[in-house]
Image (cartoon, rainbow, N blue to C red; front, top):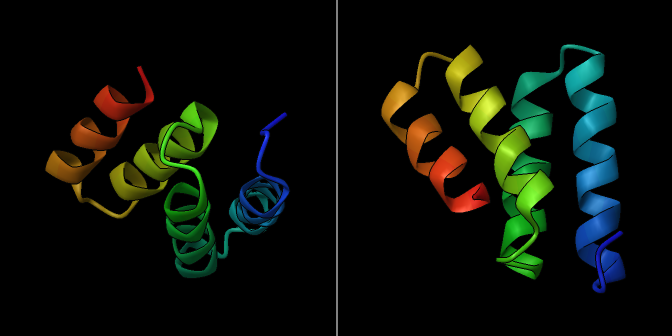
Length: 68
């Protein structure tokens, strides 16, 4: 769990949106999560997954690298 509760809430919301195939909402919420906490690896990972699903492969690779 994130030490920043706002970031964690955004990430939780992003996962729910992603699971409901609401990719634009999930993307927006992931971006808010990493803005709140730039070291939240699960948010960067999900961001990469969403970007890859949207065909943004270069951005996805960068997000996956940041997650590491």
